Amino acid sequence: MKNKKAFEVRSLVVSFVVIAISEIFFLLDVSADIFHIDIAAPWIDHNVLEFVSTVALAFALLVIGWQIRRLLREHREARASIQVASGELLAVIYAKFDAWELTPSEREIALLLIKGLSVREISEIRDTRPGTVKSQSSAVYQKAGVKGRNELAAYFVEDLLAGENILPMPTVFPKPGSHPGDL
Image (cartoon, rainbow, N blue to C red; front, side, top):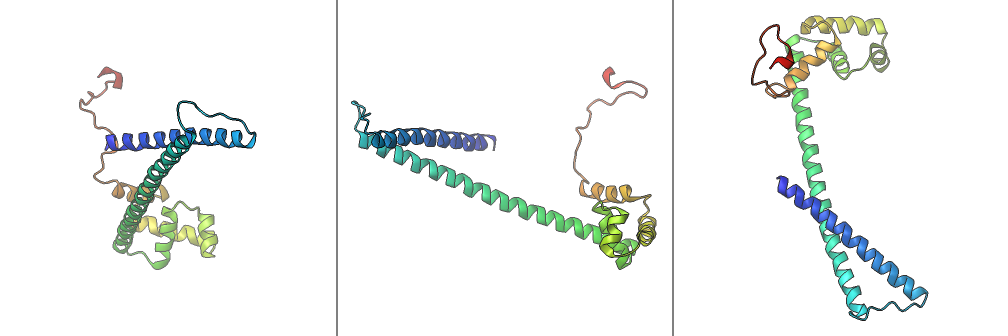
């Protein structure tokens, strides 16, 4: 995988260099034509230089087109994965809401709380008073067995990250009362 990425980067760099050199050649060629300057190279025919430069540009365009196509495919795959993960997380959230026996209003409040909206923002979205939102939020927290918005959101983040080793596990555990530098 690492070699593949290195090859892809190298191919883009080479394509860029080819395009830059061809651009310089064609810029000089056109400038010479406009100002009637003869800059012919005695060691190679001018038409051969134009042909080589044109073929090199075509090659660079093919490489760049291939890279764009690959990037678009990766983008589609990543979006599909995100949609699947998002749908699975939402299914987990709804299952918990069912287990907690939340009312439809409490479900809506809970989702908005998990998204991080404030009581004021939720009351504006739902066209209700902030006191109503606070009351329903309290009911959600009580049914979920959490103390507040942060614990509610953390509950689902914990489920989302379950089984993932986020932090490297120490191979040597410190003795009680020791400092991290004592290892």
